[in-house]
Amino acid sequence: MTEAADRIVAGVELGGTKSIVLIGRGREILVSERFPTTDPATTLGVLAAKLAEWRDAYAPEALGIGSFGPIALDAHGADYGRMLATPKPGWAGADVRGALAEGFGERIAIHTDVTGAALAEGFWGAAKGLGDHVYVTVGTGVGMGIVSGGHPVSGRMHPEAGHVRVRRMPGDGFTGVCPFHGDCLEGLVSGPAIAARAGRPAQELDAHDPAWTFVADALAESFVGLFLTLACGRIVVGGGVGMGQQHLLPMVQQRVVAKLAGYLPFVDAAQVANRIVHAQLGDQAGPLGTLALAQTVLPAR
Image 1 (spheres, one colour):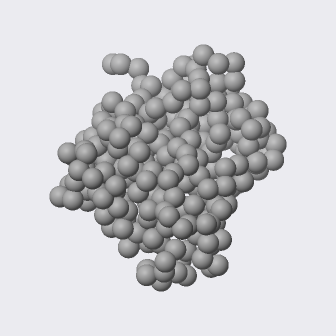
Image 2: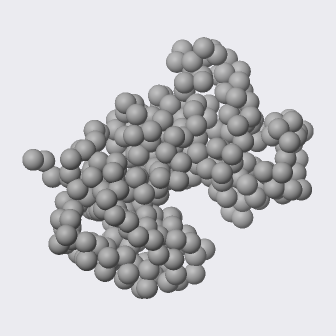
C-alpha cells in the first residue's frame, strides 16, 4: 500500500477519553478538532456534524476511522463497524461506522486506533518502505496492529495479540493484572502490571530495577512469536512504557536474539536493532493513522 499524497481524505480517531476529527492531504493535517468521548449518541453526533460541515469545504474522498475496541471488523457480518462488549459504559453495540458514514458511501475504512497507527508508521514513520510489520503499543494496556502485504490484518475482529500468554521466566510468581487472563502479555508488561509488581509506577523505577528483567523477557517471548508466525520485517514499539523507558528496548533485543538461537537468519545480533525499533510518529500516530486508513479505500483515478 502506497501513500496517495495529493488526495484529500477525512479521519476520525475515537479514543476512550477524547476523539479527534480531521481533514488531511497525505500526512498533512489541514484542519482538526477534538471533543471529549462521552456517550455514543453525543460523541458520534458531534463528530458526524463536523464531518458534514467540512464536506462542502474540503470534499474528502474517503473516511478512515481508528477506534478504541473491541470492534467488529468482519465486513460481511451484521455487526460490522459496531462496538463489541466493552467496559466503557453505554458503548457496547454502538454503530460507529453507521453513525459516521453519511456522504462517504463504501469509501470508509474502519479499524482499531492501534492498527491505524501501524499503517501510519508504515507510510511515514519507523516502518516506511516495509510491507510487513507489527506496531506494538505498551502503556495502560498492550495493543498490536499487524500489517501484511501493505494491508491491515483482521478477521472476525482485530488482532488481540496483547492477550496471548507467554512463557514465564523461571521463579516468576507474579500473577499478572489482566482481569480476563491474569498473566497474559498485557497482564505482565503494561503500566498497571509494572506498578503492581514493583509497588510503584514504571516512571519511578530505576533502569536497574529487577522488574525490568521480567518485563523485557515477556516482551521478548511475544516478539519471538511474532517473528516466527508472521516473518515480519520490523516490530515498531510505542506507548508510554514502550517509548518512555529507553533502556528497555535493548534488553528486549538481546533476549529476542538469545531465544531465537540463530533460527531466523533475518533476526540475529547484527540485525536485531533494525528489526525491533521505537515508533517515530509519537502522539501524531493516531490522527495520521486515520488518514492512512482512508487512503486504503480511495477509488482509483
